Amino acid sequence: MRATNDAGYDAPIGLTADPVVFTLLDGALCVLLARRLEEPQRGMFALPGGFVGTSESPEQTAERKLREKTGVGSVHLEQLRTYADPSRDPRGWLPSIAYMALVRPEILPASPPAHRDASWHPLAALPPLALDHAGIVDDGLWRLRARVADKSWFVSKGAGLLPEPFTLRQAQRLYEALRGERVDAANFRRDVLATGLLSDTGEQRSEGPGRPGRLYRRT
Amino acid sequence: MRATNDAGYDAPIGLTADPVVFTLLDGALCVLLARRLEEPQRGMFALPGGFVGTSESPEQTAERKLREKTGVGSVHLEQLRTYADPSRDPRGWLPSIAYMALVRPEILPASPPAHRDASWHPLAALPPLALDHAGIVDDGLWRLRARVADKSWFVSKGAGLLPEPFTLRQAQRLYEALRGERVDAANFRRDVLATGLLSDTGEQRSEGPGRPGRLYRRT
DNA sequence: TCAAAAGTGTTCCTGGTACACCCATGG
DNA sequence: CCATGGGTGTACCAGGAACACTTTTGA
Image (tube, rainbow over all chains, first blue to last red; front, top):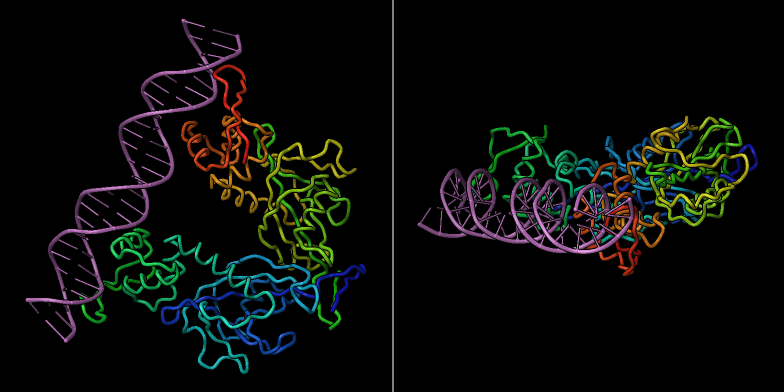
C-alpha cells in the first residue's frame, strides 16, 4: 500500500500507536496482548494498538485502541519511542509510536471484546509476536525496570497495582517481581516510607503465620 | 493539506525528522538552527530537519537534512521523542521524530548552504522558533543534561567535542558548561580517569601561567 | 619568588546494604 | 513455646564532596 499527499509526495500510509501494558499476575511480570483480526499476520498475537485518527493525539489513540481491543481503560501511558523503519510493516511505510504502562491485572475484564483473546502473557513465555512487536516489548521492559529503580516512581505509579489498603509485605513482593531480585525487608520499609507517599491507616491485617502487618494507602 | 492511502483512509501528510544539535562555543551551550526557505513561517529559525523519504529510516533523514541545510555531517544521533499532535503544524497532520546530538563547533562549515543562515545560537538567547521547535529544544536540553550526568557517557561522547589531544582542564571546562555548575578539579580528574576511557599521551601542554597539564586522548 | 594551575592524598559525610534483635501472631 | 513474619536499631562499606598539600610552570 502507498499514500500520497496533495502535493503529490509519498506519505506514510498511516500512523499507529502501540501500548505496551505490563502487570503482575501470580508473581510473574506479564504483558497485555491481543490477537490480530486483520491482515497481515491475522490470528497472531500483537500489542493492542492501531491507527491514529486524523484529529486525535497518539496518546489518545493508544488509550482508545486499548479499550476497544482489550476493554482496559483509563491508564497512564508514557511515550517509549518511535519505530519508523520503512520495512517494519509489510503493508507499507507505517511508523508506530510505542507507549508503556503498568496496571493492575483486574483491569482486564473477564469478558473482553470478542475473538481477540485479549490476555496477559508472562514475559518468560511470550508467543510469537506480529511485526516488530517483540522488540518493542523488550524496550518497554527496559524502560519499566529503569522507572522502578526510582523508589518514588514505584510508590506513586507502581504501587497502583496493589489493592488498597496493602501491607508493606505486598508492596515488597511487587517490587521484587518488577526488579527481578530480592531486597532486604527492613531497608525496603525504610526507603518506601521515606518517600512520604504512603499513609498509615492504623489498621492491621494478618496474612498466614507471623505478626500482622500495618495497612497503608497511597496519599 | 491532506493525504490518503490506497484504502481511502486519511494518512499523515508526511513524516519529519528534526535533529537538535548542541555544541559548546566560547563557553556557551548552543544549538544549531537554520532559517526556513519554505512556507509556513518562511525566514524563521527552525531545527534543520525535514521530510523523511519513503525508503530511508528517520535517523538517515535527520542526518541527511542536517548535511543539506547546514553542511554538518556524520554525527551520532539519539532518538529523543516524537511530536505528533495533529495541530502542531499548520500544513496538516505532520508528526516529527526528534533526535539529539552533541558535536564540536568546527563541524559547521564556514560557508554553509546558501540563504539559510545555518548557525549556532546560545540557549540563553534563542530567536523565536518555528512551530513547536522551542519545546523540542527544551526536551533535547533536558536529555543532554541527563546524559552528561553519567561520567562514562561524558568521556565517550561529550569529550568528542574537544580537539585531541586535550588537557583535563579543557575537559573540565566542557563538563562544567554542559552541567551548568562548577566541580572540584581533583575529583573530576579522579572520576574521569577511573572510567578507563582516556589514555595518557605522555606529552604536556602549557596554557597560560601554572604547571602544564598532561595531554590525553579518548581510547 | 610569587601566582596560578597540575596533580596527589586524606578527611568527612551520606546513602545504601547487611544484619542483629525485639515484637506479635498462628499453630 | 516455637516458627514466622513485622518492625526497629545499628554497624559497616563505598562513593562522592571538600580540602590540604606538593609540584611545576610563567611572569
